[in-house]
Image (cartoon, rainbow, N blue to C red):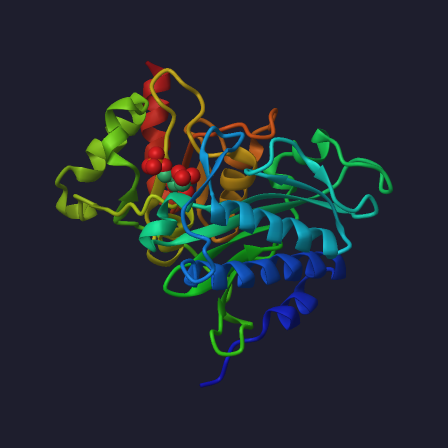
Length: 327
Ligand code: P6P
């Protein structure tokens, strides 16, 4: 069977040499993590460390391993000036002569590691704003999502799939287990419209903002014309739930809790990268009130509510939100 174009060839044809170098470095890291996820017991990478990260979460061994692998490879790329990770309290200057900064969740969904459910890596890349040759600063990272130069995720599931955009559509590359190379499997992905799937932690429904409750009530009510009730699918790993959304359509939600503006997921290295590739795939991503890519970040690890997926379902959520706001 004819394989798709390899990742290096595709990047050389579609983006700059520096972005190619950085994306290939991150891709190298995802190959190492793919192997680690599949060989957890053998590599003694299962379970947790006696460490709590900035998020107040117990650090899984694989979280720490993933963060170190990706940070070293970003540094080795020669174009990455700075690195912000869910696992690090503050930013890190890697190569003062680099022109870009990376914001990353090295291993998203790590609670799923020990049950062999899908986990992933989520990343976004901005051009640095601070002078080349010196250290990076917070301003390099606190940039609008619409200024992203590249973003994406790697899914470590039944396959390892790298999904990314450099601003010219969203593309998917599958890792060939035989030669450990990425080959293009989907070009110019478009999220299917008229979704019939909603994805959120239903157990938290009573805690979410009233608009979310109204929207879910609409999703589960009977209406033949719009094929409702819709189906609930929830993996509890953003990368897994978003990959299904790219392939089958639907909407993923982690709304704000009642009385809150922000949700659980992190703006810089979960919501912005997912919003960027979703819009490149014809979808939509809001925090309930505004476009995710238009939010001005103010803190490195700030949280954000997110409703993301096919335009029609996100648009329906907006209708409910506008009706509530009009009261
Ligand atoms: P909950 C995983 O911990 C994560 O950050 C995302 O990958 C996932 O979508 C979400 O949290 C799950 O959160 O509260 O439903 O367990």
